[in-house]
Amino acid sequence: MSLNHGRTYLAIPGPSVSPERVLNAMHVSAPNIYEGALVDMVHAMVPDLKSVARTTGHAAIYIANGHGAWEAAAMNLLAPGDKALVLSTGRFAALWGMICSRLGVEVEVIEFGRHAPVDPAVVEETLRADTDHRIKAVLCVHVDTATSVLNDVPAIRAAIDAAGHPALFMVDCIASLGCDRFEMDAWGVDVMVAASQKGLMTPPGLGFVFFNDKARAASVSSVSYYWDWGPRSAPDFFYQFFGGTAPTHRLLGLREALDMIGEEGGIEAVWIRHDSLARAVWAAVAAWGQGGEMAMNIADPAERSRAVSAIRIGGGNGLRLRRWVEANAGLTLGISLGMNTEADPNGDDYFRIGHMGHVNAHMVLGALATIEAGLAALDIPHGPGAIDAAARVIAGR
Ligand SMILES: *Cc1c(COP(=O)(O)O)cnc(C)c1O
Image 1 (cartoon, rainbow, N blue to C red):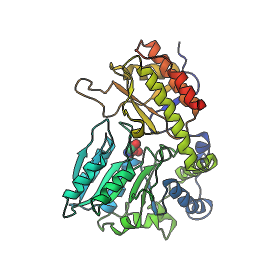
Image 2 (tube, rainbow, N blue to C red):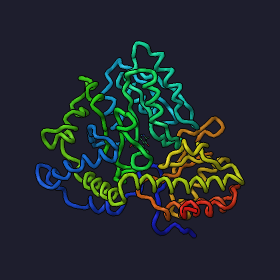
Image 3 (cartoon, helix red, strand yellow):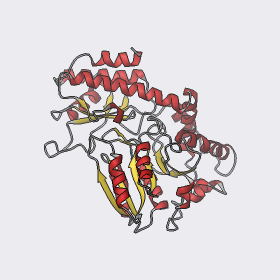
Image 4 (spheres, rainbow, N blue to C red):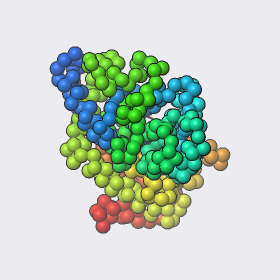
């Protein structure tokens, strides 16, 4: 017997759950791409997109996933032989660095491990040592989806400024946008990359690069026609937004998702919802950990993302738990990413919960209670009171 027939919850950290409103908005025959409603809609949507990114700068939209947005940002700013400093806190910044390397960029990686955020003092020291200002850009992620660490973006900005270094500051918000508070302009971020399929609740296929005037002035001439952010951010003709045919249906979906964010009360309300839901997860994990090995991968709540939680379960039980909850209860949890060690080559001591985007209290409480059932079914040691603790967070008590 299985109890998995019913509405499923794909609780992986992207793609996130697509709201039916978003899917329904896409369920139309292709609109005209030369004039009319779609053209008007896109012109009106770009400011809404920028307001979610908290910037008055420029926005370029690509028909791409996050990797495409990474490459777009790198292509526009870094020429072969330029140098980039990559601040690695898990998996994703290093991958962005790899993309830069493939473009001929010299990449220096500072590794901060899998359990801690970027240390701004190390950034400052490294930039001070770069006396001839070889480093053109500093790259990091806001949230590393593998470790679920939340980097202190304003503190890294302050470190760059304290070193008196002119490097551009480039931040990956693919996991965090629409989940964790992010203020592009106020925090002094020069370039931010994002994608549609996580906090923005729209199926994969749209990548975004936001950039300020300083970054625009630093654009390289070696960029290819297709990736050039110039025409995309300031098109004379509609097709230049997308370097060709518009991703018509993705745009209709994104419009609906941005409307939903507006109806919720704007991006600040969305952040507050994600904060409550994340704290419910943290409370449950803390209770489970009282009677077993379970623990949040990031010990300090101030350093945790509200979009995703990487959780140590120990005993190689991550795979067993994921299999059980999916087969028996319709819940799909995230695999561990980059947490493998010699003793645990597949990273089965960890799993992740995506709580990003179109997620509410009953989904998170349901996921946590389902995990509790899995722990019981599989005889995985854990402390009591997790669901009670999570419910109290949701109740505000
Ligand atoms: C998901 C993710 C990416 C990669 O995005 P893709 O759409 O899979 O290319 C990059 N960075 C972060 C932080 C992510 O969460």
